[in-house]
Structures are given as structure tokens and as C-alpha cells.
Image (tube, rainbow, N blue to C red; front, side):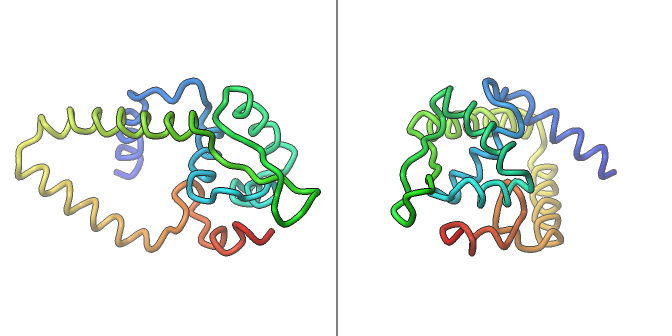
Length: 148
């Protein structure tokens, strides 16, 4: 059942293309949206990746205009990462397209089926417990976001 649900969700969300970014780059964008101004090391920790791999992801996102690197107010050797206006607009558009795709599908369901789906999703959310970071599920990132 879990496999079928995961595959269905991937299929539905996949209808709203994430081009021109990869799934890994999309995770970077979601993290930067939630934790504006974090440094590369903290971002790498949140992605559970290496700073060099994370830097390459950011290079590509900066090249398409989705990410900005700014001098840190705390350290001359450090850069802060943040979404550009274009990056914010991309995420807003992606969410709108995903919501539209889900709305089309749920509109085909009966009211009773939608109510059952909502109840099931609420149960799933409760069973999953608190998640403080939508991109990684890393509850500790919030406390490190601006201190690393």
C-alpha cells in the first residue's frame, strides 16, 4: 500500500514539471525558502551532503538566477545563501501548478471520497509526527540555520 501511495503521489506531482531544476536542486530551493541567509555548510548539513556537492548545486541555481550569494554580516569569510526574486517566483508557480493538478484529480472524486482522503491525510500527518523542515525532515536544522 505504501509503495502504491508513494508512486501515485510522485505521478501527480510529476505532472507539474520542476524543469529547469533537478529534484536535488528543488530541495535546495525549499531549504533556502525556509532558512533564508544560511551558509553553505548549514545547507549541506540540511541536505545531508558534502559542502563541495552543495556548492555545485548552488552554482547551477545561481546560473539560472534562482539563488543569490551575499556577504555574511557575521563573517567576512562566509557567504549567505538566499532565494532570488526569480527563485521565489519559480517556487510559487510550481506550487500553484501542483495544486491545480491535485484540484483536477480531487474534483473527479465524490464529496464522501474527498472527506475520506482528508481524514486519511490527517491521520498520516499525525503518525509522521512533527517535521520542522519540509525538504529534509531535519528538526535540528532550524536551530543551526543562522549560527553555523
